[in-house]
Length: 404
Image (cartoon, rainbow, N blue to C red; front, top):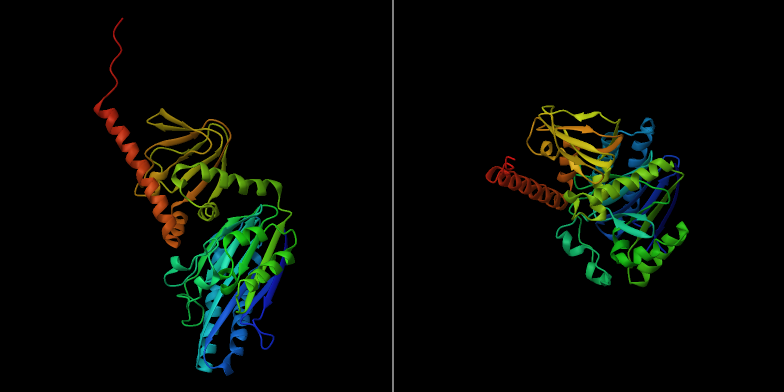
């Protein structure tokens, strides 16, 4: 995998250093964007620049200590934990700086770590992370501010209607901070865009989508900055554009197949592209030869399976009750409250599945309440329909054929 990153930061005035900063390490596949706000007199304004740089340098230094994570199949939770830990170390550093200078400092930060064909994202505050894929922009993060829904970008909305308020989460006020994390599969040509808070507030989603089509990385960043300035944004700005390429063709295709598989599943019918990317990030591909047991009736239930390709027979007491093909899912009862499998699952041909473990599933839903409502509601509807069909069969059993 090759990574190429372009960073830019631009001050609102020619004097002084900008409060927004960007940094990257292409050899590591890491990039970050931060913005600091200092609640003090003008004499302490230079602290903002120092604080944003300190936050980025601290996280990068911690990530550099974990080069052993550059493996073909990364331990996703371990990678995300490295990012969370690095951000908390940075928060302690900012908190100590605030105490020494007797001022309040708040730093927002977004980082991305491209590793083994996946992007691991960590987010605190009201900066923004986007995935730019095939000319489309997919917003990956939500603003950590009070009344967040009032501050989302709306097409054609004036930036003056989206003025920034203090973030509800930031580095500095406390020694630890809750960090939003996610990971997603990458495909050749993907771009990851990180922006400082005031930059994305000066642009609507249509403009970002238009700029994403620029073939040159510096063209994307320059046009974003220019558009924000044209819209009257007079704050310090920074952004990062990371491009990835030379992914293995099979891995790149697997990422696309995961998304297409998830989009066909009724349980995820109302999920946005961003939410599907989050779900794809917690799936794990598993493959079975023909006539293999995925699990047997009575086995401990531990996860939900999604069929990418192949055929799976569902059996109860040795009787086939259903045959499932691509786009189907099974095992969802184990995600709720069923310690043992009520049926067995056996492959009828060579089959590829996606597994979502119970632990990863609920950790994902805990991070995104909106996604949780959509998925759990759909699961409830499916279970209700299944119970209704079972009740109907018990109430009106099929009549016996007449004796000839």
